[in-house]
Image 1 (tube, rainbow, N blue to C red):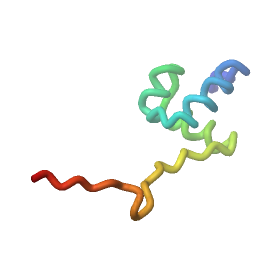
Image 2: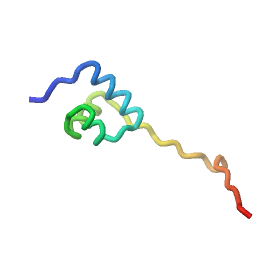
Image 3: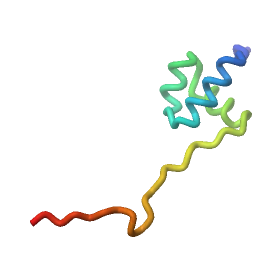
Image 4: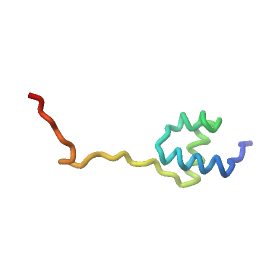
Length: 65
């Protein structure tokens, strides 16, 4: 049977997941399997942050010369 998640662990998982910490590192941090981490994230409805990509024209291009 799996070990229950404490309120502190759930709060930490929410923050670290939002920060984009890889599942492998979360598994080591919480001493649980990667499947357990993913399963809890799904159960909590956690979504990974979408990386921001600069819009066209926002990136400056410098020509060296």
